[in-house]
Image 1 (cartoon, rainbow, N blue to C red):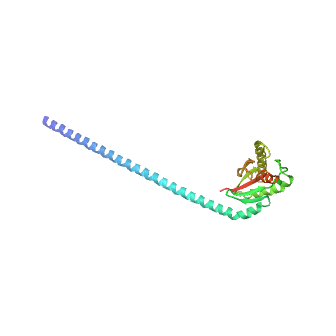
Image 2 (cartoon, rainbow, N blue to C red):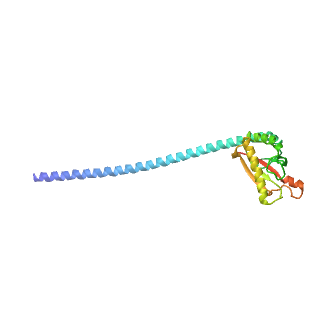
Amino acid sequence: DLKRQVQDEIRQRELSERDVSTHSTQVRELRAENGRLREELGRTKVEADNAKSRLETIENERRAAEEQRAKEQKIGGLESGQPVFMQSLRRFGAVSKNERGIVLTLPETYWSATRASSFAPTADPKLSSLGELLANNADYKVVIEAHTDDRGTAEELISLTEQRARLLADRLTGFGVTDGRIEIKPMGATLPIAPNTTNANRAKNRRVNLILVPNI
């Protein structure tokens, strides 16, 4: 009996050791499998992130291409319509074109006097028609640059040109040109186009330019 008990204990111990060994093996295998799964999950996440990034890049390129096509179409439409638009502007003053856009120069006769910041009564019909024309051509920003001659202090001249530019802007908005399209620039006597040595030259320097810039 004692011998059998010893044998049974040895057998139980061997079984327990085998179970422990088996369990340890299973734990190692499970840990290894978990490691592989984590690595695979990491690769999958990286691949997903890369795919998302590629899709975003493609979408951004598509959007940029569409915006560029729309911009080119808009430019083409503006350029094709500019001759007619410029001809329509000539009844309001001298019209030219430079790198900034179309330039409409209003004559001094729009103002009630040389140093006045009020319009002459005869200017009202033209201002109304000009406002309507600009309101109907909303693809242009309107930069109002007011200039004068050098008779007066710098502060007085800036004040005069600011009053004129602001008055003109207010009149144009009253005829439907939105505020967001208009920018005023009171220039005083800082940019003469002729020496202020004669009455004729000073008259040339007293001017208001409307620079019509394509709103692309």
